[in-house]
Length: 120
Image 1 (cartoon, one colour):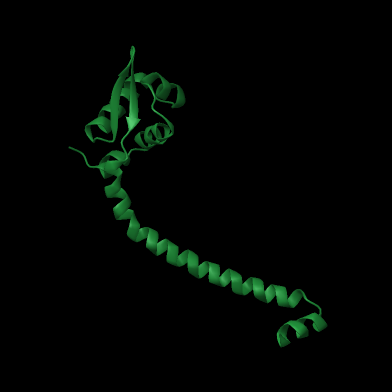
Image 2 (cartoon, rainbow, N blue to C red):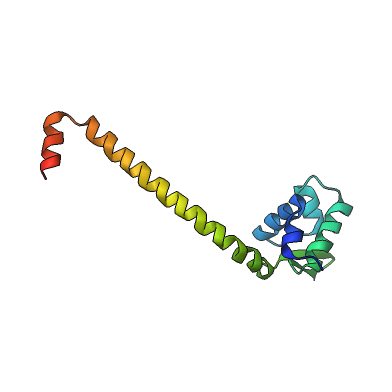
């Protein structure tokens, strides 16, 4: 059985997951939304279903596929360390931008206003 990492490595399966995140869809809905043949979409859905990333339910005469986000928790957990890395970098960038902005603000003020601000 493939892991969630193996399954989402394919860009077409990620597109299908993105569409299913919005709402449940039939195979034909997915074919219309993607540039993939019906057999191709069905193959991707089988892989997603085998990995428990989607479920299927019968609605009258059609099958609706729905996202199951729980298996993606493993991916989210793995990404959390990278998220922390990027948040630290964004925080440092924010500090630099604030410092540059405060320097620009004080340079744009006339001398008499800059002195009043500095004395406060």
